[in-house]
Image 1 (cartoon, helix red, strand yellow):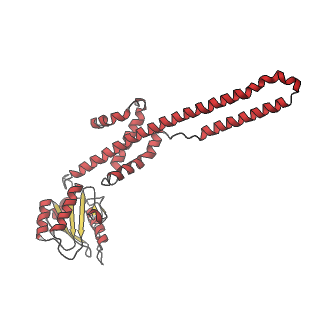
Image 2 (cartoon, rainbow, N blue to C red):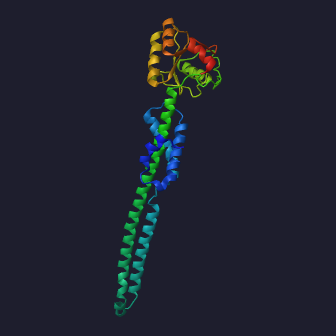
Image 3 (cartoon, rainbow, N blue to C red):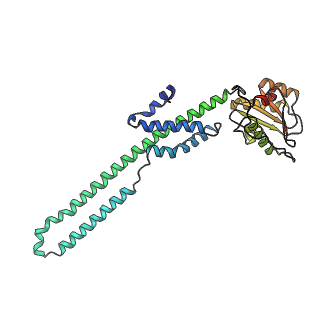
Length: 305
């Protein structure tokens, strides 16, 4: 059902197309479905726009119909041209077989090629104009439907982002439901890249079903719709500067933060994390264990992410 806000925002896109209400409704439904099903809402705005356009284009072509090509037009016009040439040659051969004395009586037939040329010219240029008009109207309609679908999809993605900004762990009151298996012990430990994937696996187990490891140059090692996390595989206790960096990154991303440390945290780091609402965890890749390192970290095992 179209909301009042959607109706106001998209009414300008309808223009004079009230006769195409069905197409408009289909494009609107396509946009809503794309916005709901878009897999990763934290892609860059440019990536989201490009992906939404590529996802909706095939369906838009089905809704609005494909753009006509000139193939049929060319076949018809060239066939007519060849028939014109054949008729002129046939007329010339017929007149050539008539005795010279009888030819003046048939001079009227000479106007036939001229008439055929005029008819063919009118057909060629009028047909071309009609085809160009059809193509122009079809392209305009497809652009209109595409804009309706894309704007609706982008609005849906923005709503999902706004919901993620306001996410409260355990706020649904539902029991903790793991969204993936607990990571298995890794007898040989984990590299930095492996630790990032391990953190993503723990996040999935704790309830963030779409968690995945990310490029560390982004400032985080794993992300989900509602969380960003960082991993410290160093041999020393994680200190406050690294936790503070994660807090800044989470504030920019407008998501909650999780910090996974292989050793533990200094008292100052834990105190800052408590103030910044960052859940702390200590993981042991070799043993395959994860424990909460502050109150929020311990609470996650009761409420889930």
